[in-house]
Length: 174
Image (cartoon, rainbow, N blue to C red; front, side):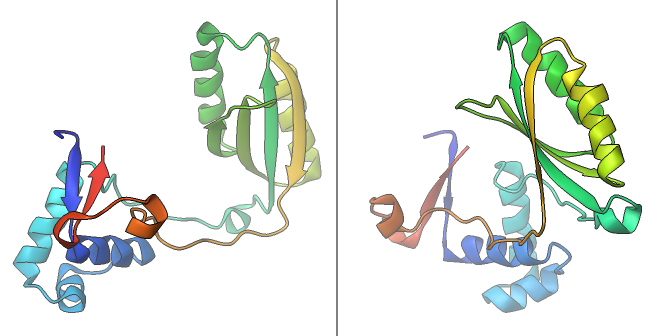
């Protein structure tokens, strides 16, 4: 399959380590996985070229930037038509308060993670940027009290996916 990449246990360990700390040096990665630094560099480059590694992200604490209140906005768009999706998505992505946007199935069409200065700023955001839009039928707001990061994303184990793995490797789909 042209759109797949075989990941062996060394690749998977590199992915796990980089997801825990993207600043890990190639020398540290190489030592941790038991390969030469040049081999490690080649493997990471292959993971990037193949699309398994999409980039590196700097996480920022919104509270330290004056946005201590975070919320999830469930948004229903009516009518939910293709010509409205692109402009709506671009508008939300351009908002400085928006942290993430998800297009969903079910009763809500979008879930928007926002960070704002406080309750009044959240109210203004909902009223001026969401409910004021003609296509937005409903917005439901949920405050975020806490957040925890979860483990790194790795391919499903053979037991989890119900499939056999060839030669100790895992096939990742692009």
